[in-house]
Amino acid sequence: MIELPDLVAGGLAAGTLSALALGGGLLRLRRQQTRQRAEISALRTQLDGSLRAFTAEVEHLAARRVPAAAQRVAHPHLAVPGPLQPLTVGTPLGIALENVLLALQAEVASQRTRVDAAAQAGMRGATREIQAALYRLQDALRRLQQRYDDPELAQTLFQLDHENEQSLRRAQVAAVVCGAWVGLAREESHLVDAVTGGQARLAGYQRVKVHNHLEPGTALVSHAVEPVAIIVAELLDNALRHSAPDTDVVVSLEHVHHGVCVTVDDAGLGMTRDERDRAQRLVAGDAPILLTDLGDPPRMGLAAIGRLTRQFDLGVDVSSASPYGGVRAVLRVDSHLLSRLDPADRPPAPSAPRTTRRSGPAAPAPTHAYGTHDAVPDAPRHHTPTDENGNGEGDGNDGLPQRRRRRTRPAPAAVPEASAPPASSRPARRPEEAAAALGALQSGTAAARSEAAPAADTPTAAAAAHDTDHTHDEGGAAR
Image 1 (cartoon, rainbow, N blue to C red):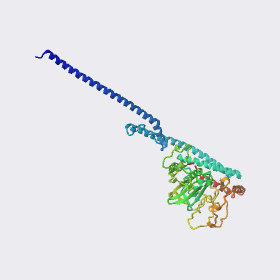
Image 2: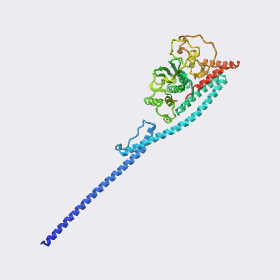
Image 3: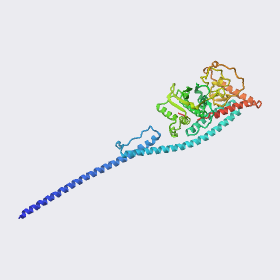
Image 4: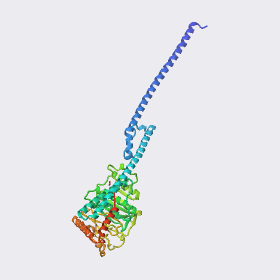
């Protein structure tokens, strides 16, 4: 039989063990709660840091990366900054932010193209009105040239006509850049006439020296005449603008394996590699041309060349330096754009430089103006390939084109080509001589008008030739 003290001792022992077990459980529970509070605090701190990092990343995206991405659409050489935290690259967050930039660039490019198309449409309409007004002014000047015989007034009218021609060229270039057609339909023409026709559209055409090494009769098909004239005018304008006024711009016309090349060499400052690469991209015409890419104010010459090279399958290269330290520009006209005209039936204009090549043995000089003393004029003039009488504009004061009276005279005796003095030995016409020639022209015109009606047609025919010349060459700046 168990005694009472032993029973009490056993109960106390069991109670003590139960209390110890309960205390241990409570202690473990408190420790677990402490750990959980620490983990919750760490997670809360981590969440706050992630939130601050995400906020900073979004602010960086809005302040730096989005503007840079939008500018990169217009300026591909600009770099777009990366994320603030390089560790986000490749993560879902980094990929999402990159998609935001790509979507932004696509939308900016789309809206930029749409706005530029609207601007080009507006400019096409404006240039159409300007060209129409300039054509009306040209007709009015032409009528005044035919009506009045005063030499001083005639010289002033010719100066105004030349200035109007330059304005027409600029308007035409702007229209071409904006997607308009070249605006003129021309017959087949000697290639050298197209080159000198483009030369005549410039203010400093006296500095251009053309060396013709083509076979006689080398011509352009009808739809290539005006584009070639515009391209030559813009290449020459670049060369004249970026070279010293006391230097010459040398133009060479050469046959190549696949056609003909027109090479323009200047002695200007040249271009840096970046400028040359950009110019080559423009003249190649491979990428769409936007007005916002052309500067302020827009420089449209090279852009117009790019439009024409793409439309008419021409080739232009401006990636080389000239032998004189400037820029060499080469226009390549492939064989499918070339044709042939009989120089005897349709000679080049009198102002066109004579070719240095002959298709056969040296032949006597022809009896028309091409090959006579007018073959090396003081200044280029506008040419009309359909003028079979060789009528053109003469030279007047300030190097501007002048009309020349058509005269009926017996054909001169054939003179061997070798007997003609070289062009370099012929003295340039002085202003006094040009003025005297102009006075003689006006006096002869007045005398002819006082004669019988049949005789009165002679000066009118010369004026008509001048009118046709102006419809032959209309042009449209630059590097």
